[in-house]
Length: 250
Image 1: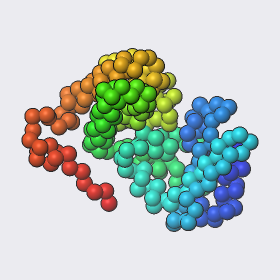
Image 2 (image 1 turned 180 degrees about the vertical axis):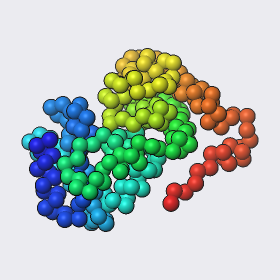
Image 3 (image 1 turned 120 degrees about the vertical axis):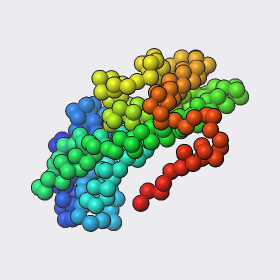
C-alpha cells in the first residue's frame, strides 16, 4: 500500500483530470503475497490520451488503468464476458484518492447486475466451453495429448470458472479466489470439486482429464437446462439461430 500511495501521487501530479484512484485485486482484499502484482485504476473527468501505466519496480509488477468517469459508469452497469473479474475490481477496492465519492457509486452499480443478462452470459460461456471440449476431443482423437492437456486447463480457467461466477452472481478476483471461497457458490455442478481442480492443474492422465471435462460440461449444461436457459436440441436450425441471436451492444 505504501507503493500504491506513491503511484497515486505520481498519477495525480501527471493527470490533473484524475478524480479518483484505487487499488483492486489481491492487494485490496489482503490476499496478496510476496510476488503478487499491484493493480490500480484511476477515474478521469473526460477521456485522456493515456490508457494506463505499467512497469516493474523492486520486483513488483505495477499496473494502472486510466478510465473516464463516463466509461466507468457504463462498464460498471454492463454484464460482459469478463464480468466476474471486472465487477470484483470495482466492488472490492481500497481508495487512495476519492474526494468526490466516485468509487462507492461504481461499486453499487457493479454489485447489482441484471439477472437476465447474467443468465444469458452463462449460456454464452457454456457455448465456449463446448468449443474447448470439442478441441479436447479432436486432440485426443489425433493422439496429440500435450495439446489436449493445454486445452483442459483452458476449459477450466476460461470456461468453468466464469460459468460458475455468472451462475451464482458471484465475482472473483482470481482463480485462487474461486478455489478457496466455495461458500460463495450456492449452485455448483455435482462433481465440481472432483473435476475442476484436476483440470485446472492438469493433474492426471490425459484420457481421465478428458472424461472429467466431458462430465463437467454435461453437468453445467444440465444446470442451465433445468432453469430453461439452454436451446433444446430438437429445434430446427432456424429456430436455434433465432434463439441464439445476440443484439449489438450500444
